[in-house]
Amino acid sequence: MWAATRSAPLFLALAALAFLVAAVAGEGLVPMRVRLWKLLSSPLGLLLFVFALWALLSTSWSHRPVAGLRMWGEFMLPVLAGLAIAASGAFAPSRRFMRVLAVTVILAACLLYYEFVTEFAVRKWLALDRRQESFYFNRAALTCLILAVPVIHCLWQEGGGRDRALAGLVGLVVAVLVFASDSEAAKLGLVVMVAARLALAVAPRLALAATAAAFLATMALAPAIGPALEAEMPAALRSHLQPSHEVRIDIWETFGEAAMLRPVLGYGFNAAATLDQNPVAQRISQPRRALLPIGHPHSAPLQAWVDTGLVGAALLAAAGLLLLARLRRLSHARAAMPVAFFAGCFAIVVVAHGAWQGWWIAILALAALLFCAAPLNTRNLEDRT
Image (cartoon, rainbow, N blue to C red; front, side):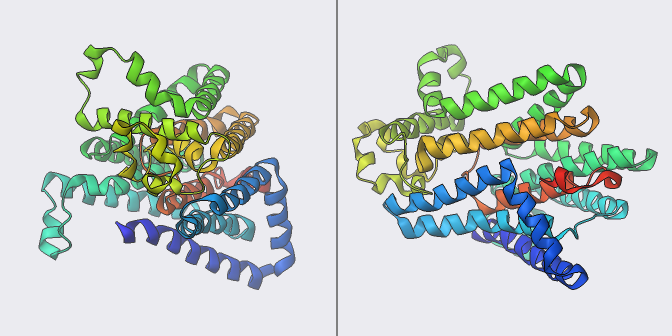
């Protein structure tokens, strides 16, 4: 688990270093500094920069500041790596590159699917570690899904019949993998992506407005979602929930109560990981307090509230709305898949892993870079922003 979490940011950072060296060797520092300034001085860049500073500042009032700083570094490393690759101006994947990446995703998905249906025959044969339960590979299934979407988008936008057939094969294979996995978040994300893409094809402006409204409402009401589900969900419906789903609602209720004890500033970046050790959290009602050692609320919007308070959640909400507004200015053909991707990824983080985990930020950064590469003949810095 440790290697899976930390290796992705490390490899992206190494790739960024290679791109920076290539850019400096090819055209010097000045053009790269100009591109970097344009990225950072854009409204979206400024919002994310302010959030990063706020997150760093929040570690000063955390009960575990050193742990918060470590997680801040893990969070920022892939962000800075993605920014460096974009600023280098050297990331220009060819159509052949996209085809190779598509085949790579297909092979990875097929290997994972084979492992699922054979109860990890390859891992047993290789005598790898004992973790052979399928839920340990939810991250791998999510990675295949996240990388598949921009690959499909690029091939479909740019390619002819063969490229579109390859894009369709990527989608089919990854969909089979997702529904064979134990990742309910990946299944939800895929369903939301497909539904959003269909809605955008029928009524693009309405679908985009609905996406923005759902995003804003979820960010604003995150601390209240758990208590609302607990109070309003019909008993008949709750009886059909899987035990893990019912526990997740209880976790949201617990961390929602914690967020409301320090609503403005939060507890400090990554404080949710050890919130049971925070003196303020001891004011949470005893039955719910037992769930605090779980590590994180399994909801990124709620974790944003817990760790960085209303200030941090508002900054992230503003950044998300600004991104959707930027996508609204693109043509429908170019905007539809990125908007659907946004909706699906947000659905995933609402119900899944910790908000700041480096592997997740790294694959999102790579997916964003791939989206910026399509269509190849109209690539420009504004689209990268």
